[in-house]
Image (tube, rainbow, N blue to C red):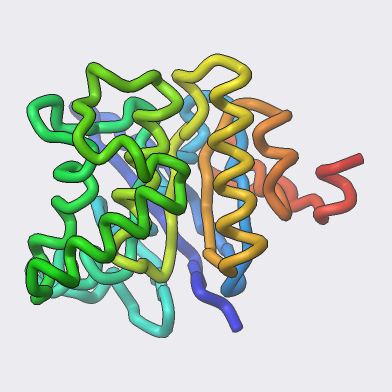
Amino acid sequence: MSTIECRRLRKDYRRGDEVIHTLQDVELDVDSGDFVALMGPSGSGKTTLLNLLAGIDSPTAGTIRIGGTDIASLGRGDLAAWRSRHVGYIFQLYNLVPVLTAYENVELPLLLHRLDASDRHRRVAEALERVGLGDRHRHFPRQLSGGQEQRVAIARALVTQPTLILADEPTGDLDKASAGQVMDLLVRLNRERGQTIVMVTHDVATASRARRTVHLEKGLIVDMPSCSEVRA
């Protein structure tokens, strides 16, 4: 069963009198429990596609169904509520609030949900434990390494128990060792917990950790190699 179904998806931007066709008639299916890497040169539409899947941006034309919901048809309020329940987003530069502890950063998304304090505490503690930071609750971002900050960001993405995790260059700002740890964690979440993940990356080694790779070029999907082809 597909978690994501994109049909004839198009996104245009206007720059003065010029229309930029960022995505052109994209057709994409991602099954529940899949792990997909989006690759392509800069300007190919990878992050645009990720933002459309997150409901952060809206398509010019076409449909996006996620878990059976046509998110392109939702109004702003309904879309925000849908996103808070179903999407966990991991940013390249972590986007942690510097004046909040690791615990408080992970807790932030839960403040939009109807949970009492004990439920919030349980979920935050479990999420930090899952990413190997159970002993870092009271640390501020400045007291953590880059790899630890990204793991806090992953815990924040997980804490709402989303349908879908979207990651935009999650290892792009990390050294090789930290990048490997982050990818080990994402692979484990996918393989052991069945978490559906779509990840943008420029790095071939990072992409090879996914189950399959989708290549975009000039707003078009140009090929979709199988898992065995990606790992060859």
